[in-house]
Image (cartoon, rainbow, N blue to C red):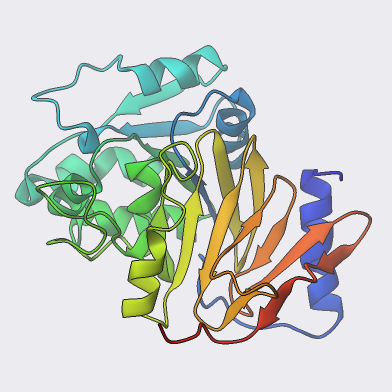
Length: 291
């Protein structure tokens, strides 16, 4: 199985050429998203983010707020990681105060950024600090001008519209006191650390309560790259898909995508790329059975 950027672009072109063309409904109309499942050791994931931002010269902003530290210095680990991979203009932006985040002065670094990276921690901290603020508006503007928003662990989950594990008391509650994400992916809930922390069954609770949602769960050292309404899997492990209207032919309520696999977010169809995209045969259109 081969997995390359040009194959991903070819697959999108093939869809357009068959006449299955529609406005963006789930992913961003412009720009890219990169969602990683935590524990990223595969440097190609960070390198892909830098590439999507425009290369080593692109301005990148790291937002570490999910981590919950009292304060952050400008040379936190995420900043150093990008610098070690050649990124030359990396800065840090942080506040816990949504009033500050709602000012033009605070959000100004985002107006020229080409990439923004959310570090890990607890995703509700990101919601409390940035949801529906000037920062949030500038993040949307960054996508509109073709930039990339990425993040690992909490930084992946916050990009969905439904905030999984958003409870302030514990990260074991799937539907907690925070349920609204930044919604760069519409009608989607995102989980992380999937197989590493034995979480592969946890998303079922959300999808059974909200059957219209699409659930995406990412294992560690693995990511999805979203462009328009399609994504590809990169990294070292698996991504699980939870769709209340689809299951595998043996009756399972979720199925796995491997690195190189692709997914159409509108038709909710998985594809495996060999020379051309081919549907995964074991995924069938069949609603989940009632328990």
